Length: 111
Image 1: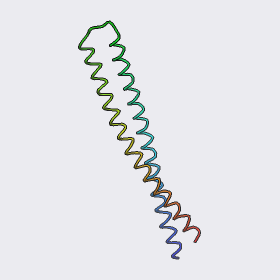
Image 2: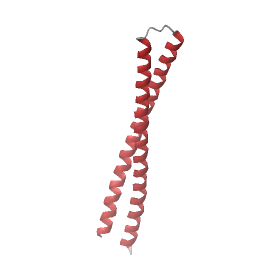
Image 3: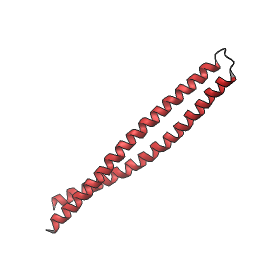
Image 4: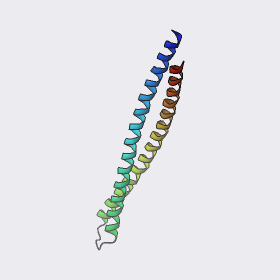
């Protein structure tokens, strides 16, 4: 009976840790996608500013608007990189817990 309770506890822990791992994995994928989108938006803003700078236009309002867009896009990239780093850390921790729970569950099965 004790082995059965031990197995049930190990399975419950495994199930919980595996669910947390899957959640962290999905969160990381979302953060990576958001970072890639932010980087793409920054490149587009930089390209627009560069195109203006090499054009014959002389519009200080437009130039400022384009420069501001680059600054905003850069800030979003910085934020996205930080979010991705946090999600990566959370994912690594969740994965380690899931691996440990799997080992404990497999050991309980072998008893």
